[in-house]
Image (cartoon, rainbow, N blue to C red; front, side, top):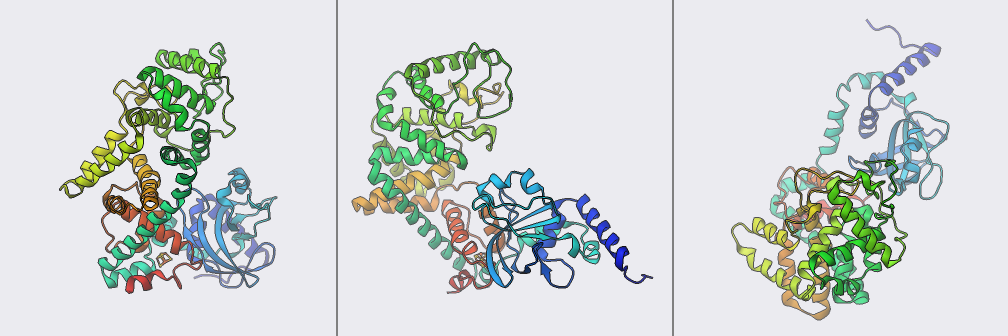
Length: 501
Ligand code: SF4
């Protein structure tokens, strides 16, 4: 038989034990409590004394950034919407560097089990973020039922949205129509964004600049953009006419040098401070394998002869898988340009897009399209970077493509198709426009990301259309237009009505 509830100091001690118990487990317990709002009954308050009402806890985010996005809260009766970050200890905000990370710039509430000495500050505005201390409102009864917080989180994450429930009633065609419409909107938006680049930079240069923006992992974009401005295609074109080995050294010396990857003196024999760091100039040539050493020396010599400083924009350290290192992308781009840009890059691309369009009715189009795209970004067998990740890493045993299918899909969706669509619209070229829309429907998609996976959970598992560039882009557009614009979860979202129409 249970005794009477503890009171006074016994109750405080019992609550303290509960907090320690939760703290000993992972953050996921607290995340599950937030997702399902499993607190003791009664009014919730922030540590600053404001009343807290949770209208929507937000979408669980398994990717980088805050734990819950697009939450909707009432603080002292005033509505706020934004992100929620959850930590066992308040000090983790600082320990994890969120105060310097703009991805946390929309956090409106810091949910913590234990208070620290310093409240979290907004990385963008520098303002104090309200804190909700969850320890005092944890309920032993609720926690007893929580044997598997991960399962609770997964259930929360995979709940269908109102759109998914409506799609289940209406059937797959209605949903496919809405996704197709959203993907067209996205294609149009991207073409509109590409139009000023085309107008300002001109034809080949415009395509060059757009491709560089999407050449690497997203945080690399400012660097690649600056690199394309430092060395526009017009300045590289005469170098591309040199024999392959000379062209390669001349162009890679410029790109690697501008990235600060050639700033170590070959005579410097000090040990690398961080051998695993990438990207990084190698600390000592003695440390490199012989092939890399001679290449490094040749590139550096060429770079020093130019007498120009590296770019101010730095390549961010780490953040991407080693095979996706910026160095590999630059080498891959060199081969693409060398293969296609010497006799009129735009003409080559147009001919290629038409060839791809003719394949459209091929019974195995996806495979054929992927192989054709592979050839456009192919790398010669003799290229040593097929085995290398950076100068700072020993070569790998197996080769890998420098610009893989994932990045090719990204380049097609964000640079090539928008560029040619903007050009076709400018020139009133209806035929080309039709070709581009057709390709948009059938080209292979990028891999799923946390936003498309989120949409698949919310809309599926009922009857999502087959994965293609169109579906991928349509889901992204819906995520932007609906899931991040209706700041109250699914309530009042307009998409279910669109599906029903
Ligand atoms: S907000 Fe709208 S689009 Fe997003 S999951 Fe809910 S109903 Fe679907």
